[in-house]
Length: 94
Image (cartoon, rainbow, N blue to C red; front, side, top):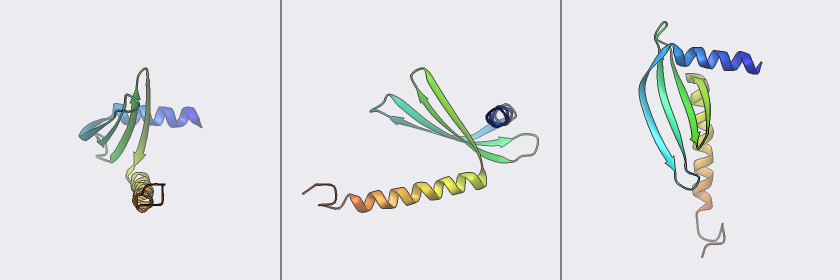
């Protein structure tokens, strides 16, 4: 299963072009996130590539658009919960 997903990801990356890419540095860890919108050249099917780049290590996650929308929904939920925790007194702040 792992190798099947790995080869699918490589095939997707090799057969497309970047439409838009956003780089987000993470200063505390010396890493960065890169998120790219890719367009597959043979079928013109868009997909999203999320990459975590750190010193000596690169991790890639290739998502179809429905997977990306699900991931984005989860991020929005975490963001909403985190913003509620930033109110005075919830995290020991006064």
